[in-house]
Amino acid sequence: MRLLVTMYLVTMGAGSLAQSRLPACPSDANARWHACQGRYVWPNGDAYLGEWRDDKRHGKGSDTYASGDRYTGDFLDGQRHGQGTYTFPNGESYVGDWRDGKRHGVGTNIFPDGERYVGEWRQGDRHGLGVSYRADGAVLRSGRWVDDRWAQYAVPDLARFPFQTPAVRADADDARRRAEAVAQAERRRRQELEQELAQERRRRVEAEERAAADESSSGTGFAVAPGQLVTNQHVVAGCTRVDVLSPDGRRSGAVVDTDELVDLALVRVTGLGGGVASLRRPGSVRLGESAYAFGFPLSGLLSDNGNFTNGVVSGLRGLRESATEIQVTTPVQPGNSGGALVDAAGYVIGVVVGKLDATAVSRVTGDIPQNVNFAVSMQALVDFLARNQVSFRTAERSASVDTAQIADTARAFTHRIVCVGAPDAASRAGTGPAAEVDTTVELLNESGEEVFEIRISPVTSKDWGPDLLGDGTLAPGGRFTLQPPANDGCRYDVLVKYRSGRTEEERDQDFCTLTELRFRGR
Image 1 (cartoon, rainbow, N blue to C red):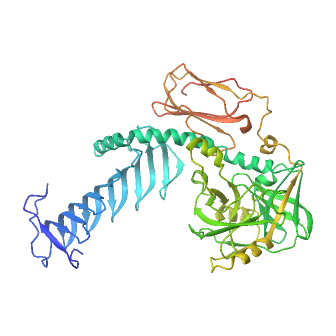
Image 2 (cartoon, one colour):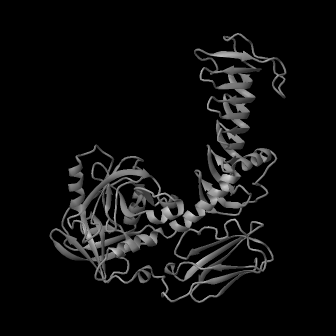
Image 3 (cartoon, helix red, strand yellow):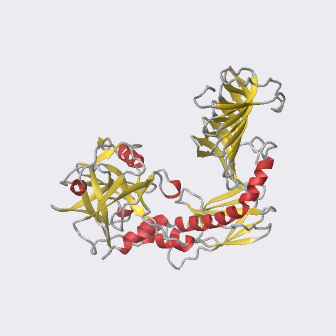
């Protein structure tokens, strides 16, 4: 409703609102505003200038907020509804369809760095077909969005979702000019960082191996059911034998199943004593809640009786927005891998998987990241256990208990896992070439069209690597040397994107035997 306590208004003269033939609203604050045009200012500084019906914004008008936000367009019964433009002080803007006060229909959102999404919206979120463009107009991602996240690759009609439409062209050019210098520098920095982070999983395995001795490595596991332990896949990968060490002795374990994608393994142990963990319901973990880890890090250097550390849940997604991991500040070291991450009541909220390589990130960013560690999410863990038909205890979030009691609870269901006779890192990964193998391949552009991007990825990875061309291009007839790290294996997928936006891929190429890879623009 328009009428509020401690309000004041300023009416407009006839004809002062463009394209409106409605009379000015009455100057009496108690009068009903219906089928008129007027300006109203709220006590907090928000203001509306436009058409009214039944004391509500209705028709054409403009909202100006004390925060600096602004909306100009259609209103229906007091809500943004129809066509309109919303701008933010940081340079972000949206132009398109609205329904019940939210972006709904087809519209263009331009972000402060010049990138934009053009496509379908539902209830304020990107939902449906759309195209994400870089600031320079190149297609960054296309396909189907679900609940504001890209979900499936597709090739929508670019004529339906163009980079520039008449309604947004002027605003887009201005935003791009403002952000161009910052965006270019940020893209270069992001590409370098992505290249370093692409090796993160490999570094996790190598960190475990550096702590190993006598061709053995160790990690941590915890009981989710009698005789059933969960640990990381990389803890048991390539082992000739898996032993489980408990206070009552050493037992041989059998690896039942592994999932390399989420880095989980299930180990069966006969006669294993001790407690059984209770697992929190997926989706119940909250940002900022306490997170504790009990495990056996740096075997031979730290205590063989286990170590207990504490921190908080610092992110509900993992490395590069991974939905199968969460981020925590809980300190972990090589040997913690596979241990339970528990909450303030001693219930499991994740599986410790590794830490960010601070040294590598420092070389790229110039800054040393602190307390950036990761755990497998509860949804990934529950899905893995369900696949193996393991019955487990569940628990809801409850009151905190004494920290020493949390440590005792975690110690009771946690066990040290020893990998005996583990081969070298290349053999454990299953894709590593011998050290003397040369993985250098010459890429030839025989398409007759300029290449705008080149990306390469190991066949075992689900993500493409960074753009190797950076700000450069590869002319028709040109050559570009591809030389991926030898410890990433022999087999790679390669993608090129042409200036026109078309892409071409060559999948599962053996870089240990190839010398040339030709792209002809097929």
